[in-house]
Image (cartoon, rainbow, N blue to C red):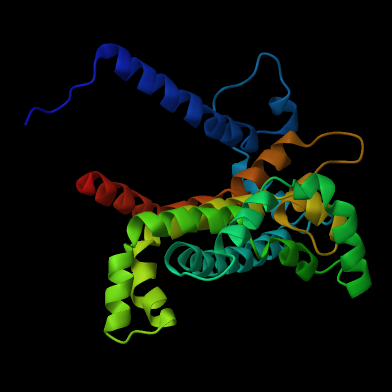
Length: 276
């Protein structure tokens, strides 16, 4: 078996792609480690400064941003929504892929149609009125509730379950006396772990970076991390060094989540390659 050797052009293109991907992170750290005057200096300074620790402390102690509360709230919101989406999507995906019941195709079509409705644009006013009627404005429940079910997650797990769990395996488990929930727990979940990891990372990132809806239903006393970063601005100027320092802090949980679940994605890709 001969090993593939990349050409010089391939190496150059890969190196360019790595540079373009890594440079924004490096530039964020450069600005976060300098004073605000250095951040807007011309010509720009490309080497890190010595103010990173000072800027991070200023972010954490900022009186209006409430950055620590924002990090905590975003973690709670993203974690609850991610767990809910994974749980509901895997259950629904198993039902649509391996169970026969009346109206299955119509329900799946309805789920797909929900993906065509932009919630952020068309559903803001009705959702806000619902939250006001429930007296949930200003609380994390107002941010969590609209995202507990995800049409994309149901579709993704339906397709992944169809490819990973043969009907013959489900029927064999039924013959052995396994209940539907036991089949889902013992057979389906282990088979779809890579898909769950992809869905979990995607959902966590979307909720962590969500800005518009939390800005509408929350207030400055109970922010998410994106609202807290926006609050780092001064009244009549932009504090680039503090904003970039806050952004650097805010991506640490995202990196941790990707490192924790990235192995599942790689493992799923390797299994698919072996099967192919």
